[in-house]
Amino acid sequence: MSTAFCPVSIKVLLGVSGGIAAYKAAELVRRLGERGAEVRVVMTAAARSFMTPLTLQALSGHEVRCDLLDPGAEAGMDHIELARWADLVLVAPATADLMARLAAGLADDLLTTLALATTAPLVLAPAMNHRMWRHPATQENLARLQDRGVRILGPAQGDQACGEQGPGRMLEPDEILDALALGTLSSGIGPRLAGRRVLITAGPTREALDPVRYISNRSSGHMGYALAGSLAARGAEVVVVSGPSALAAPHGVELVPVESALEMEAAVMARIGDCDLFVAAAAVSDYRPQAPARQKIKKDQTELNLRLVKNPDILAQVAALVQGPFTVGFAAETQDLEAHARTKLTAKGLDMIAANLVGGETGGFDRAENALLVLWPGGRRSLPLSPKARLADALADLIVERYLAQAPSQDS
Ligand code: C5P
Image 1 (cartoon, helix red, strand yellow):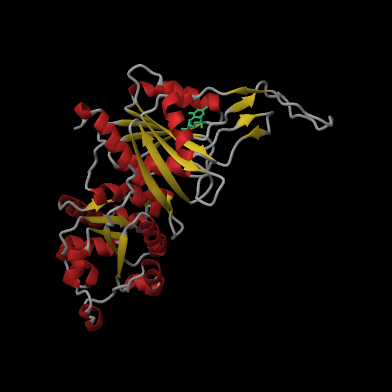
Image 2: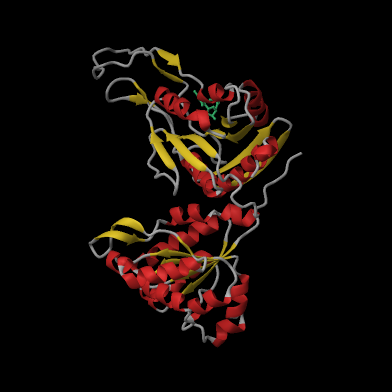
């Protein structure tokens, strides 16, 4: 029986305060929407000097609230209703001034009033000059807020808009979203993978022909990296063994970069011993040149024959381990999706397989969206076309569900 995935939409109240990082709020609103969140935005007066409310209104699809004493806006959803509406209040960027006002419990504008009136969790993504961040006043405010259960994401180290270096950069929108774990909040399952170790392969592999050329494929790594973030957000310790990809490792995920299938195999087998789950999201090259040339191959012949040999099947090897981890594979097919995927599930001895059609209009390699048909022995579920980050959350929930169903005694 097919069960379509229907995410419960989480209601996020995004507060934007006045720092240069306010420009990242636009991306944050877009990304929240992609992950299935319903977003309402509240801006402080200073934030409006950096970003127009109209931009965030267009992206969130709702009027942006700026003033506490606005009779027009209060006639719609008043500030107490707005405070009750939110499942989560996220302030990004949170300036030193806003943190000070929150720590003092002031209610001198709409955002600080909402922070006092809501019972939803409050999460701050600070952004400020590194000296302001390190100042004892800010550090005291930070400690007071943390004591009250406010969650702080970042700041990151690095170049600052003022030209200086140090801690104070706001985390990137994707890092904030990975850390928030919206999927776990919306499904109410909590960090079910706490204490579990997950190994994921991702990206393409490169098989060298000579020192400058290689055979590879179009895999971007998006699905594997997004899944790594989603599983880390569910409390797991996640390591990604990745072929070359332009993506950064998600927040809290350890990245082990490799190039070829043989390197990927070695990196996986060296780490698989103490893993609870293994997810093979990499597009591993099926073949590699038998003997890569030591020097650059010259174009002095009219024909060139390449002898390729088969690469080891990393997933099948892991699935065959005695007392091995819960194994999840992917299957990219151009036709007869379910039949081919089920054959692969059985042939490789997997616990679960996520199959998608490639080569059509429905997503797959090198695209931002994808749809999946997930199969396991005796069951199936369709996850409809959605942005890969949101799909990764849905797949992570399903992996957790099946893993815990198989290993109930390990459930903590
Ligand atoms: O057999 P096929 O290549 O279609 O299987 C795809 C699945 O197997 C993916 O999960 C992929 O990561 C994994 N795989 C692997 N090692 C290979 C080939 C595929 O781990 N050499």
